[in-house]
Length: 311
Image 1 (cartoon, one colour):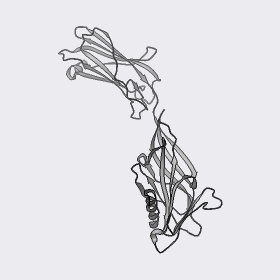
Image 2 (cartoon, one colour):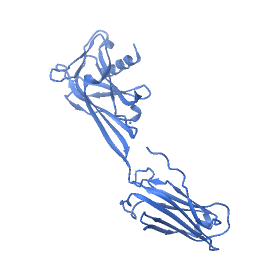
Image 3 (cartoon, rainbow, N blue to C red):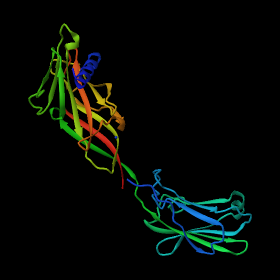
Image 4 (cartoon, rainbow, N blue to C red):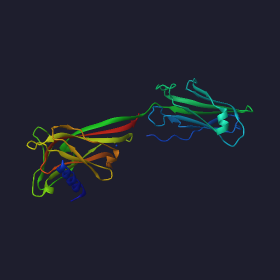
C-alpha cells in the first residue's frame, strides 16, 4: 500500500472512534561645511512605513563621533523639512549628553505629535547641524521617504463540490465511495462503511487538494477546512474524520465534522500546514474518511485561508 493510501486508512480509522520589500540601503549622508568637526550621522531606514504594524515604522537618526575627541559641542540642531521646505520637526540635542555618551539619538514616528494622524506621503529631508566650541560647523543632510503602506490581513475563500477536489481514494473490503451522495447534490461524495468481520477493512477515504492563487506579494498565514454535509440517510449519528497534510509530509489528525446536515466549521491551522509549492503554485492537501459502520454525505468543501499583503 503506498504512503498516501496508508495515510487515508489512518484518517478513516480515526473515524472509528468518533500560510516584498528589500532591506533599506545604508544611509548616504551629504556633508556641507567644515569637515574637521569629528561627528557623523546615520539614518535608517531610508524608506519607512509609520503604520504601527512593527514593520519599518520608526525612523532612527544617530549622531556619533567619527574619532575620539575631548571636547563638547556648542549646539546640535535636528530638523525635518517636507518637499516644500516647511519645517515639520525641530529639536535641539543635549550637548552634555553627547559629551558623556559620545552618541546622540533622534527619531521620528511620521505622526503629528502623539496622534494617529500621519504626515503626507512624500520625501522629507533630515538635517543635523553641529557647532563645536570653536564655532566650527558641520551640516549633514539625508532625504528619506515616508510611505503610508502597511501589512493588511485578507481572506481567500473557495467552495468546491466534494468530488472535484479528489486526488486519491481508498476503501476497505467493507467500504465504498458513492457519487453523488444524494440525487439533489451534484458533485457530492458519499463515504460508506459497514460492519464486517475484519474491522480494519471497514473504511472509505479520499485525499483532496486545492490550489491557491500564485502571487509573490501574498504571505499566506493560516488555513481552515469547512465541510458541508451530514450523516447519510439511515445512519443517524455518523461523523466524518478529516486531516491536514503538513509541509513535513505528516497528517494532522483528530478532527471530525458532526452528524447534522449543515456547514461544519473546521479547525484553523497556521501556514506550516501548507504542503508547499507544486507546479509553481501553493496548494493545500487534506483527507476525509469514515469507518466502523459510519456513512456520511459531503456536498462541498470550503477552504478558507488568510494572507498578508503589503499595500
